[in-house]
Length: 179
View (tube, rainbow, N blue to C red):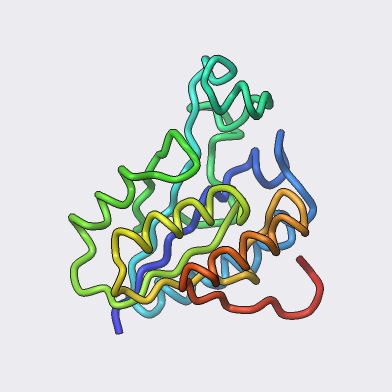
């Protein structure tokens, strides 16, 4: 079975930077293992990057979340160096969920039978992209690995997982209480 892994926003600002958290730091080794497994099995891996300009605070998102983050060209915008993006696509997205990414996937999906998502933040960008992809590919199995996701808070992370389950996204349950 051909599979596609989309790694959402594993960027420095979401891990150790302006919007970083202990939960985000904890998932990095698990995300790395998942990426390595996909590449070893010759499956496709796509990374997304939350991408803003220095005018971020003047956008609707910036007015609602006035924390400057993921400014293009900064260290905070970069995908963590613990993850290897060699031989992977990287798609910049200007908002939480990306119709551009979904349209790109439609044009390049090929014979993929399952799309899996992981990354940050489960309660904002992961859930947004999961629902967009579910609408774009209603017959493709869509999975989110809760072990490789973290949210802004533990409570909002769990709420996002429940929302995705209710929308027929397969959620791989968390192991233990690390998230």
